[in-house]
Amino acid sequence: MNEIDTVAPGAARVWDRFAVPAALQGLVGAAGHWHAGCFAEITRIGRFIEGSWAPGPGETEVRPTAAGSWTEVVGRVGALALRAAAPATRPERREVLLDFLRTWARTPFADPAYRFRLGRLAGTTSFSVRDDGGASFGLHLPAARMTRYFEALLPGGEAAPRPEEPLDVMDCHRGWGDPGQLLRLVELVRERGPAPWDADAVVTLSEATGLSRPAAALVLAGNPGASGYHTPFLDGHERAVLGYKVGELDAARGELQMLRDSDRLDLLADVMPADPADLWEPGGLARVAERTAEAWIEQHGAGPSAPYGTWQAAVALQTRMPATHLCHLFLDPARATLPSGFYLRGRPCPPEHRRLRTAWDVMSAYDSETLVEAVFAGLSWAYADLPAGDPVRAGAPEVVRQLRKVLAGGDSPARILHSGMMRGSRGGRRWDWLTGGPCDRVMARITADDLPGGRYESDPRACAPEVVADVVAGLGLSEDAAALYLQLLLLPVPSDRNVRRWNGWTPARHRTAAAELASRGLAVEDRRARAGRSLFLPGPWARAKKPLPPMETWKAPVLGARLSPDGGEVREFDLLPGALPELFARVWELVRDGKGPAA
Image 1 (cartoon, rainbow, N blue to C red):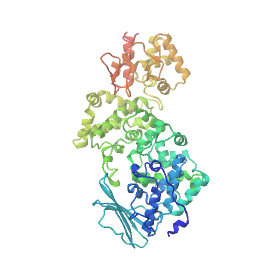
Image 2 (image 1 turned 90 degrees about the horizontal axis):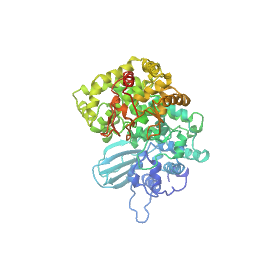
Image 3 (image 1 turned 180 degrees about the vertical axis):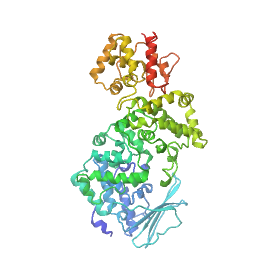
């Protein structure tokens, strides 16, 4: 008998076939292949390897359960242990994980004296064989058109028996998770409950790696992204522990989709403390964060870290490129990493080659469309909606330079990127904007550094004070009311929240300025769908479908927005046709010349 059995007696529980893949999601796959009693089968395979298995009635051999997916855990069970101890793990899933860890501790897979190897076979035969040197398994998976190979070398053994030579064989990682560590962790969770959460450790991991804070929280909770098979991805309990909103965590999940299950297991294989009790000590999770940061940087390198508020604003853009990658694109344009969903993710790629490509090395239409969408959405946003001094805003001119440089090349990425940029009705306008004066004038505003730190270009008092002064003198308004009037005349989304952020106003100050405009008949109070405000210019209104902004029809020509033939719907809006100071001056000129909005 394996001496490990004397440490933790008892049989594995029988779990509902949906419970196991839900608990293991994002770390171990084969969701449709787990079944009740699968943990017992893992134990049976361990018995076969060590030579203590005796066939029962009707049994002739043992075969790896769950499509052999559990073999990926060998040497990397630390990831499951972290999830089992994390307070954000759902209680019902924690029970499955604890039972898995207890089962695992009683098998040779946790015994450091054994060696294991994984690979594949060219043949289509399933088998299980054993001799004094070890054991080997072949598992043919017709649906996947592959045959898994799994090999165990007994202590002192040299080679496992096999009917054919395997392909792509690799030694399994030997990391955290010997029987004592596993059983100690299970005991501690049973006695003390999950380990305490530490929000400061999340910030540490985020700043060290360039991960967003919500993504760093998911990683430290042992849940670094997953597929969409189990919904909801996070429930109310999990979100409450992590401390982030649904949209932020969904964005973080998209950010981590670049990881395969094996990447996630590798990332967290060795971050647990040698003594699991350290998780419950002060600073325990912070030390896990430090080890995790080292592992992340080894896998993916360290990315630049955007201010958290900027990342939150990038999430609201809802681009196909994850918000963190969009921020990286502007923080380090020349070396921005490849976002999730790009073509490379569809093909196996050795880890040493994953960093060789940047976001500019597009390989498909999907690549180019994702990049183009992110660049043009990001340029307008960074310029008009981020404050002076924000590092993402400061990177916009370099993004333009990099885009122009790539498009000027004669290689395949240049052709694919150009094709993606020119696709659709907006393509020509985007090209004209990028290669013409409007882009240069907008970028010049950023590089000129004329705005005081923390001020916004969307505040005319900051970027066009002389225009505000003309409005004050021409209409007899207060400075606040004049600034708000210019914002209503020009900006595509002058929502109450945006105006107060751009102008640094309290709600009371905003209401005072709005009331002044309404009393003069320069604006009307109303409620309109997706406007986010109660003050509007007089005259017709154009509705819009997401992500386009609805707006007063009067301002659409000034902004370059395209409306439906009847003027009732915004059909297209992408880029500002110039820098905001000149556009603020333009709308005031129209009003002064008697061409302003009217009911």
